Image (cartoon, rainbow, N blue to C red; front, side, top):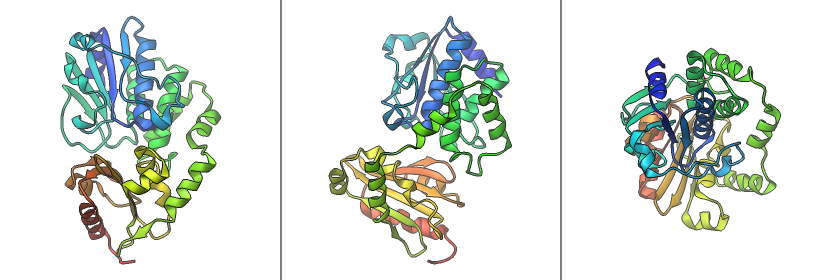
Length: 313
């Protein structure tokens, strides 16, 4: 499965790695991990990682992005990671590259690179990159192993989600064959400030329920301004305050912004991705998102989610 990609990597002297905007642990982990892998195994090549700021994941080692001039793309291979749509790629200059490759585990929406490995059976893009490294015989470094492990942990919910099967644990064991400090990693991932815990409590107190027991939080622009939170933290960072509420199988976080209403949808057991796609988004079967034009559309999305439900509240 990976031979064609390995051959392309061997072919090009300059490789520029991209991932999706507003990165999570999997996007950054796969990007940092692949850059470290390629620099270790192909030291003669110039390997870069580009994109927007790491945000709340800036604690990750080597999360600072490289500065790359436009001219470098002319004879380069661009690798896009963890991104299901061309519009979501951070730094659209990937399209300037002579050749393009994509690794992704989201539900397929469109082909936008020359060579693509898209497999939704992987719990994370980091798992996909780890498998590529293992099958290709690439040497791991502590940085590569730790970065890829970080993405596997975050996208699998600490190996809790049902996407984390036997292969996930095999690949995790492969990464753990190289020593790195997991205690420090988990402290960085899950330590939280008192202020943020208080904010989560505030969000939890604003949870509402539909007739079919879909939980949702709706944050207006005025509320967002008063909270003094960035949109990423208010949207994706707060959606799982509603996770693990007994009797709630689907939960949604709406956040009003100047660009529209950010909508994060999560599910414990049902495939909510078609609903996200209907409203112009995408993602995974149980974790998807989209951007909506107004509150009326947000309420329509909730009604569509209710239609997936079996029993009323």
